[in-house]
Length: 254
Length: 254
Image (cartoon, rainbow over all chains, first blue to last red; front, side, top):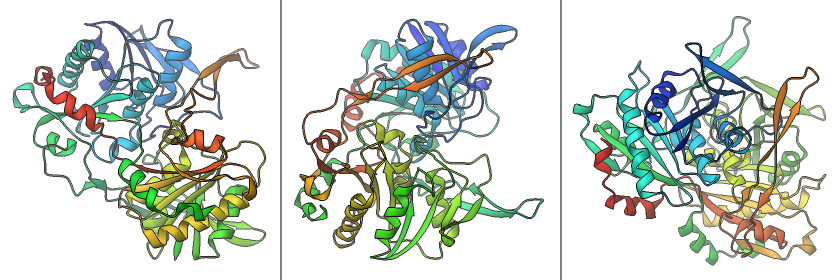
């Protein structure tokens, strides 16, 4: 199995290193990841600037390709320009922090896996649901086992899996739940400050609020110590509204 | 009606100017838009850097607030920090270029409207489907009429409208269609080049391919001279797969 690994925390992040170690047990791994932190970049791609690629070493040995771009850029560039053969699987992560509920749409980690799916390759995004210093080995093992399961079961052409793993020991994990994207949103606030030159600036802060309680939702599942696996796609059409709007007198906007 | 206008082409783009002129006919308009081009940034938000805001003038008069950030940043900052009252409507655009099919997920224009919806405000994204020099007045009129229609009909809490207008005169527009997000994807290729210092770089290029023919899809509709109106949401859950996976033996990944 040829496995492409990417992330959004940057090629030097501990999460991607743990992931690569595990993935090497089941396949040939190529790493193509951003050269620096790219959190919350969403599904950004770089069209107005050139992309540069450097070989990145870890402990003196070649580890992967560092791209001066976004997670989606990395996957596009890997598949279309760097790799000789199309990979069998794209794994993005392990993100340091959860990617549940509304955070999915801001997530660079999910975006790399989404790009894999768009390119026709089965893809998964894996996140560890803590911002505190963390140990990624268990989440990496989960990613490896899920990769094998996908190898057996397959994924539909436009579907990827978004996996969130609580920062617990294996024995403390209660189980695995298939979940839906939660409805929780961020309670954004902006710190309004002045810099040393007395110029104003704003800094975004906040956290998820209105957390769903039902374990059918991703964030509720991880908070209750379950691994959450959410099948997501990128057809954003609201089909209910699509039907409703047929009764609107829409022609009058012409 | 209090209307917040943003875009991704930047506050000095002709598309946002045409939009503002029309929106002023039906309400009080506040412009909060990126200080420079932010195309294809997807739903990026800025968390690791401060956001700065400057007043932007046009023809010597105050036009709006220019934000050193992404379209989603602009809408968050406007609603949470700049505006005294929550707006009744967010209108993003008019984008210079189409936002149909897979392009929706890369689009900064759509992202600004999505952010409005997340914040609980009815929102629309409007794009003119050409990259050639263009006249935005007709598309702006369409946006105004649609804003009035939404004022009457309302939108469900998590749904926004993605509108694409062909670059034609009113008399050449065949009508208005409620559409679905198309399935067309980009045939990405990378130009592999060397800079004047003989360092390699890649440049992304490509266009939509495998265009849907059925007028039920956004890109097909605009190519056939219809205004396309697509209701979209940000629940990415693939509900079909959600049911299918319940039969997977998922517990074994623990």
